[in-house]
Each structure stands twice: as structure tokens, then as C-alpha cells.
Length: 224
Image (cartoon, rainbow, N blue to C red; front, side):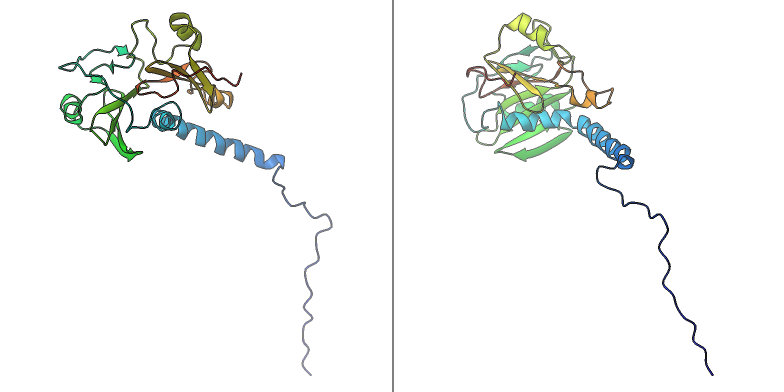
């Protein structure tokens, strides 16, 4: 006679562990670590984000607006002149002259009928397609400064002390403070508040841009 073994299903534990929930405290360190990694990566691309945000925010469409006549030759200094130039790059400069002055860009991409180029001297330059002329220049490099000494790392208090009440200011991810031909991107301090010590402190300038800046002459709008 054949005897078949009886197969029994395993008994459940006397005290089963609860399934982890989305808000369970054990998952929070992983979520915080992930967020900090994203913020650190984002900080590396902050200048690029400022260029892109400028196109969607204060910046004019690349195909619109007249540009001034640039100097006959580049001026290799570190001066920011609103609506005119930052160092050797001037608004209205031809693409060929830009390439001759600075050489090939380190990074370049195309969007919104213009090319956006990052050069080794710390400048982002927007060249529109319609006439191949420079319409926007920006920097996150503190060596470039206005005649009043305003540069990346300055505070909004310093900006207002030197330039007065801005005709246009608004808050998105960061704060935009605009004057005619001149825009400051001011950090709201979100990354610093989450523990990224290398991130800019709240209220400090992270990017400066000049050029065709739509909105700088409109009434000030703020969320404060």
C-alpha cells in the first residue's frame, strides 16, 4: 500500500508585520536622501536653468526687438553694462564675431528660434536665428560686476540700495528682480533649507542677465 504524504500550507506567523505604508517613518530617510541628491544635481545645472527660465519669464522672444550697435571691437574687461554688454560680449554682436572673440562654446543647444551657448569665460550667450545676433548675455560668475559692484553673491538689499525700487519683481522657484536691460535671479534658499550647505543662501544673487528682457518695464508684480 502506498502512503501519500499530506502537504500542509505554512501557518501564518502569530504576529504578522504590518505592510509598510507610503508615509511610514522608515521610508523617510530614503526619501530625504533622494531629494537631496536631486537638489545637488540641480545645483550643477543652475546656470542652464536660469537661461531656460529667462526665456519663459522675463526674456523677450529671440526674434523680437531691436538690438544696439555693439562696440567696434570686444572689450576684455569684467564689467556689466545693463542692456549693452558683459565683458567682451555685447548685445547686437554678430555670431561670427562672438566665435572669433571667445572661440567655440563648451555647451550649446537650440530652442525657441535661438542658440544658447556657454563659454569658458563663464558667460551664457543667446544668439537668435533671424539675424545671427546676440540678444541675451548671462553669468553666474562673481568676477563680472556692474559699476556699482553688484555681482553674483550680492543681496537684494544691495541691489535696491544702488538701483532703487525695481520696476518688476516676481517669485517663481527663485525671485526675479528686473530693471531696464538688467535682470537678477535671487535665490529663495530652498536647497539650503534642505541641508545643501553649498547652495546659495536665501536672498543672494545666483545669476545676472542683460539683453532683451520683456517685463522689466512693466509694473512691479510680487507675491509677497
